[in-house]
Image (cartoon, rainbow, N blue to C red; front, side, top):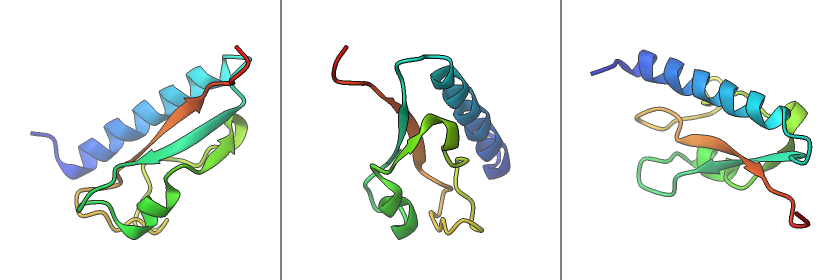
Length: 87
């Protein structure tokens, strides 16, 4: 089983790939943070849910304790591309 540090690194690498892929798609202009809603989600991560950012300035994920994350099992946020409604 991977350590918490290894899981953090895998999630970080996946986040970077997701953002990089979205930046290559012209019609994607924004990305949205999605966090889980459950007992393991800290107040900081819950407050990040549904926040949208231009795809050129998406914050780094997963959040760290320095950012304000207090999730017991590590940051539970991810990012998704916001699809335009006029496609």
